[in-house]
Length: 157
Image 1: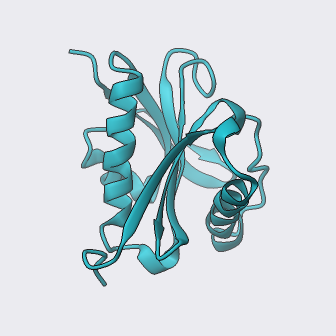
Image 2: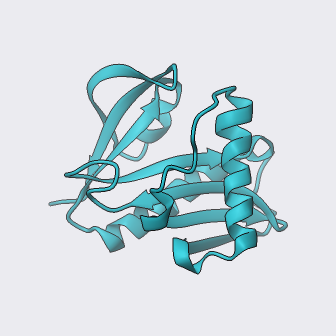
Image 3: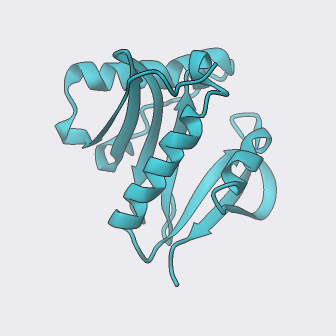
């Protein structure tokens, strides 16, 4: 399935700019994927959302993809970060995940032009992040009983 003929809208807001409906739909999308689909009970509301920028895509008014952008000092002392990267099941393998990451990195270059970004990637999805220039660092580790690996990307010249 392709998304090329569907109307995609992108939204970018700080936490305090979100409406209650937007927040509800974002949290629902994240829960659907990270808690229900991956059968991984964990505390999604980790207080980092308050300090984050939220970027999401809707298709036909359905929340379809999402990323959370965090400045230095929130997840990692020396790195800004991207987290909660999610694409709903219906829109996987359509290019939407790639598009939301492109938009996320463009926003990050604008917000943090000299930063290095650090992410905690589930091991199976590392090749996706590598397409954007992320490289693995350190050793593999378990996060919520799921194999993860740290990856970094630098904007600095």
